[in-house]
Image (cartoon, rainbow, N blue to C red; front, top):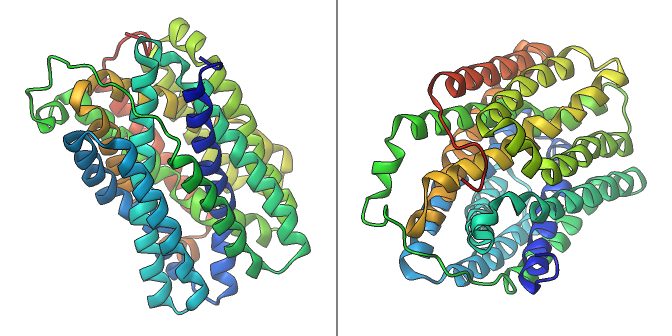
Length: 385
C-alpha cells in the first residue's frame, strides 16, 4: 500500500488537515482571550467547530453518496472553508467571530468523514491498515503544535490567523488529489440508513462516542489556557500536546496486532477507562509535570486507539452506499453533538466550578461511555471482519 500513489494523496490530506487542528485547537482559545472574550464566549466560539459537525457531515455525506461525486464534494468543502476563515482578518467582535467560525466550521467539518470513507473503501478487506495512513495526520499535528508553540513564544499571538490560513491552504491542495474509490454493492443498500442507526448496538456505540467527545470538551477548549495560567510556556504547551500524539502514532501502527489480540470491544473499553483516568490527572495534577506527561501518554488510548476502533466498527455496520453516511453520522453525533455539549459545558463551568471539577465531570462522562460499551456493544474481533 505505501508504494501506491493513492496512499500518499490520502496521507497528504490527513497531514494538512490535522496540521490545521494542531495550530488551531491548542492556541485559538489563547487568541480569543487576547481579543478580550470571556470564558463563556470562548467556550461558545470554540464549540462551533463541533456544532457544525452535527449538521454538515451528514448533509455532505448524503450528497456524496447519492451523487457519486465524493472527491468533488471534498474539494468544494475544503476551498470554501479557507475562504470563510479569511473573515477573521476583517473583524474581531463577538458576533462577527461567531459568524466566521460558524461558516468555516460548516465547510471544514464536511471533508474528513468523506475522506475517511474513501480511505476505507480503498483499503477494502485490509481496513486494519487505516492507522498507517491516518498516522500522517498525527505527524502533521505534531509538526504544527510544536512549531506554532515556538512561533508564539517569539511573536505576538496576532500571527496565529496567518499560520492557520497557511495550513488550511494545504488542505485545499491535497483535497484536489484525493482519489475516488469504487464502492462495491452491499446487501444493506436497499435499507434506509436510519434502520441501521436504530439497531441497539449501533445506537449504544454512537451514544458512547458522544460521551467521549463531550469528555474531551474541557481539554480542547481550555487545556492551553489552563497550562499557561499555571506558569507553563507556550512551547511547553506545544510539547505536552505533542507527547500524546507521538504515542497515538504508535497505537495507529499497532492497531492490526491490537485488534487481532484483544478485539475492538476491549480496545474501546480500555480507551474509555484511559480517558476517565487522564482527565482526573489533568484536573488535579497540573502542579506535577510528570502527571501531565502521563496524562498525555494516555492520549494514545483515549483518542488514538478509540478513534481507530470506532472508525472500524462504523465501517462494519455501514457498508456499500451507506459508507460515507455512516462516517458522517459518526462525526456528527459524536464529535458534533457530544463535542458541542462538552465545549459549552466547559465554558459555563470553568469559572464557577474551577478546572479540577470541570475535568472531573469529563472523567465521569468517559465512565458512562464505558458502561454503554460494556452493556450493549457486540462487535467483530478485528477491523477486517
